Amino acid sequence: MTRITLKIGGMHCPGCTPGDAAAPDKAIPREIAIVGAGSAAFACALEASGRGVETIHLIEKNPIVGGTCVNVGCVPSKIMIRAAYVAHLQRAHPFAGIERHDPRIDRGAGVRQQQTRVAELRRAKYEDILAAHPEIELIRGSARFTDPHTLAVTTETGTVTLKPERILIATGSRPAIPPIPGLADTPYWTSTEALVAEELPRHLIVIGASAVALELAQAFRRLGSDVTLLARSRLLRRYDPDLGTGLQAVLEREGMRILTDTEFRSVRHRRGWLGRGRFCVETNHGTLEGDRLLVAAGRPPDTADLALDKAGIQTDAHGAIVVDDHLRTNLPHVYAAGDCTNLPQYVYVAAAAGTRAAINMTGGEARLDLSVLPEVIFTDPQVAVVGLDEHQAEAQGIEVESRTLTLDNVPRALANFDTAGFVKLVAEKNSGRLLGARILAHEGGEVIQAAALAIRQRMTVQDLAGQLFPYLTMVEGLKLCAQTFTKDVKQLSCCAG
Image (cartoon, rainbow, N blue to C red; front, side, top):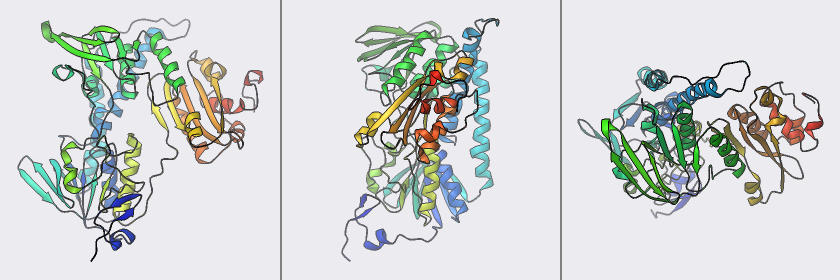
């Protein structure tokens, strides 16, 4: 039979026959393998189990299951951020008649409480699930491809060879370490070490200007550390510039030093007494010294050890596995989900992708729709976005208009004595259809989903302006901003319809 190259889901599949592509096998596979044991992997395993797969090999190279989110990401960071917020309120709350004071911080006690909750969630959401599903077999080891259909798993006792009918790759990501001369020879922190450090630095230097860097930098500052943040360009350069500018003003008011457009020349570390030392970071701004250095410069996909080249699996320039909206790679039996792919790196995207991958691995047709994707950065004020900004819309040939409402026009923000931030809405000019929202506000992450639902339902700003919103709430800022397309909200009474 002549072998030809066909296109599956927007990607070429070298070596596939017409039957492979045009009529995929709809039978439920008896055996699948999942490389990784985080959110995407468990979502896939549970869905595949429910759809009748008899044997599910779950392969994890790390000593614990659960992946980044529960162990070293979302859960511990949000606990630390909340604790730092409480400390900040004690020191700098805005209300008259209530004493302000510097709290005594026992970071060790905080870390122990934090890690107890992490362990509880890992047990409830991952370990107990394994115990309840004997069809899901956990193999502790490091997997690599030896050919397109074969995985070799190196364990403590030897090598296990698997030839499953379907494979999902869900190996997540790892911290990026920029190639700054001397950095690799220093005892720098990544977010993993920073989250469990039981001693607060006197002066923390942070390299990075995106979500992880900003969240942890503010948390350490609020817990009492001096913090200098070094950004290669500006804060949040992927986002609307107003978000980074507004957030920077707040962080600087809290005492953080922020240096933008930084060129890194070298990093050195001098060891000192009792394990303390000094980091020296040479930049175009001069030499900066601190007792700890946090590198939070992104998270590339963790795919280097998989020998993807042996299977012929396509990756992009950063090592991310290329998938289509059905989570298929360029091999018809291999799928991928989560941070190891070219998808956005959010745990809720990973879980949704894992579920849909399982459906498609077992003969279904489930598409991952990311056209309306809410995003939140958990600084204070929070950064929350969904949909298109003006530049993105115009790049698609859409003529738009936008309105920005500062929070001193939102009654709840006034009642909180916390008016730092804004709500910005972007709409199609002729129809008024809502295209995007940009929010910088305390608990802005609790607001953004309302905007996401409005975009999903193709509502106009006039529709949004006419909705009933509870008073006093921060989400009312969406209604008020929508009203600014046709009214001057400063001339309206409270909760004006």
